[in-house]
Length: 200
Image (cartoon, rainbow, N blue to C red; front, side, top):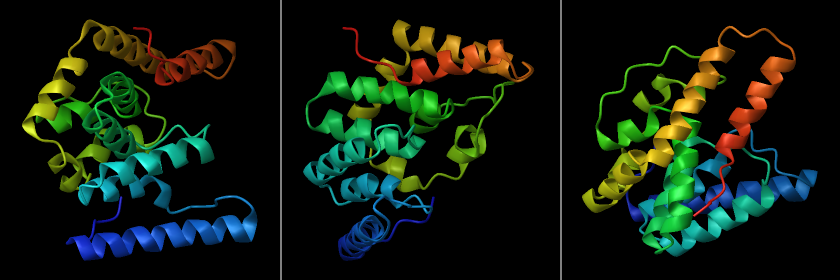
């Protein structure tokens, strides 16, 4: 993830630059190429401005344009925060659980808690511990103490513990499971867990 600009003027300029680039891609190709992941940075940039409405508009656009995108951990985390700030705690909690499974080290990092590296299969560098170690500090600084307390309550809930434990067990099995039916079933189950829907 690239470094964030400093100051509201520079942040607004970066937002305009990314939005123009994405618009040009769509006009040129009929779809968004976005190999640099600009779509994951706009929500956090809006939050850095304190523009929750702008962040929510971006996340709504993202959901419409990229319905099958599994998402990037910091993007999920900022999405959860924007929803929480808007008063939609149910959707915020659901998005926080998605953030938790997108990188198992993410929420402990946010809360300043130590988390040993799991002895599991990591399917991409976004899922590894090194990802959060290199995440820009601005992502964590967006969260105040009240918001972190809320995140900890969700993270420590029985629902989150159960989902997390099963997810870790699946990825522990995937570390050694050979390609075949069993592996496909495990991957499908992990995907279903990451696409959690609210059941409250």
